[in-house]
Image (cartoon, rainbow, N blue to C red; front, side, top):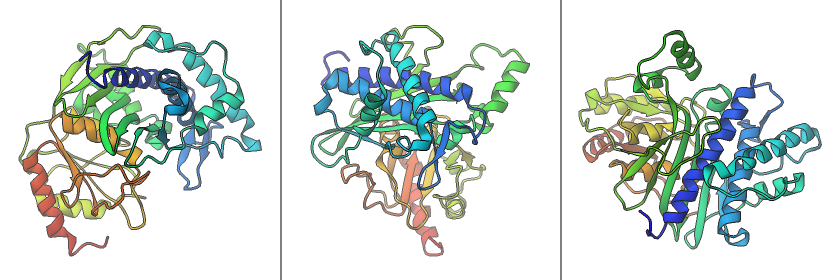
Length: 381
């Protein structure tokens, strides 16, 4: 509501995530394969693309322009090391061009644009400005420019995630999900298959529509969803926003549960043991990125479980926005010991008990927590 303490911050966050979605869609359309010059590998071998750096630069510039450059603390995933290497000159040029094209469209989203085209050094500075480590005091924006980069490269599910934390407490969360299908059933399929099927048979009403931005402010008990703005249309607030809420299913046998696609940082076998112990009967819905959080908030799934493999530490930007949205939509998110997640300890979710459990309601959540304890002694985590 206008007049709320964080009214301006939420409005800017939603608008800039819409803008970031348009950048990602443009880049994704131009991606041919993982071997593309637009895709690089980070030190941990995870992919990073023009979209990752482009979104980080765009969001950083907008937030700094509106809220005052020196006063804006941004905790974000990407740095400029790879981008600054000599063999990345072509990639850097593409990032610079992509960011300038995107910022030129900012007024369509009710946002400012630069008076002049941003140069290479300015773009690198806006990306590297996002070097905050967060913490328990002050105001920090938390950004994952492209969550699920592998899903993005494979033209499947991915998300743009932006949250605001103040004095160690999450205040608001925004998730942009450009490939999220409006029909729940299509989540089971690779996005490209969904697209080709949609084109073969003209769909009824909105079944072919995809893409949305979800958002919530802590303490309101409301989570909202807007459709993406397409082509050269302008974002007219409130942009057909509608309330979303979690599913009412509380029978484990009927519940749909999500888990990560990649096995590298998630223990699928332990998750399967917990699912069996809890009485879950459906096959897991394996989805890239924080789209899993979006699915629970919108009522398309009931449970998300992630148990990290030994040595892997969860980062705050992979969860912050999704946690706010699920909780305000009526769901519950804790660690596997039932404790709230603590985002105030820096870039990692320190003190995490075994893993993360997100559920559509307290009844299912209690059953999953109980199943974790029942399964733990025999696990190999």
